[in-house]
Length: 213
Image (tube, rainbow, N blue to C red; front, side, top):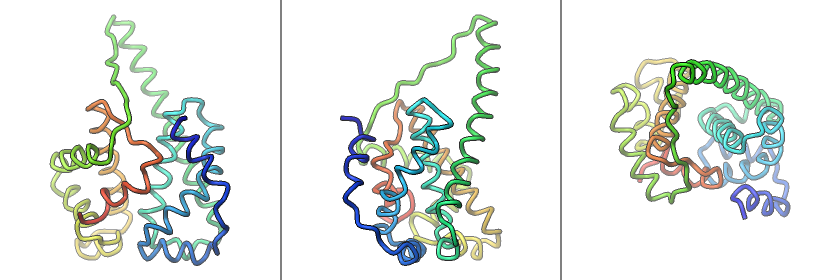
């Protein structure tokens, strides 16, 4: 059975929690609340993203990005009146950006083909959290100094974007965008080593991405 099928089959029995309290708990950094949010909103977001893509890998990538952005913006969650509309907007923007990137990539591949150059193929497989942890550490080591500092302040010190921004005299948006870029660096590094993140591991992996060991 595929990982996505396992998630789909285990979602039906979850009790409907008070959404305001759930979002408030996530704002306070509660990982269990985030995991519940993930399980509640996963089917809806997957269905919406599937309207943009047929490729399961692209769907999974977009879903990862949505939940990562939710977590990075968790300090705003208790102020959001319509979480469904908000996450739908995030998902749509991510999908549109991916489509634009794919169009550029297709043009590049077409140019390579005309020159008789074959594009490299990177094997993809599922890996355990322990292996991902090792690769994440390597990826962080290779980041530019400022990006690495912001990522480690989030991970090792458990600081929220607003706290990091205040400490470094940066805007909160700059910190959030830097963290998103750091996560993209990590994902690209994993893929360059023949691996990809499994969406089913995403909630557990936040302990690797954003908290001290």
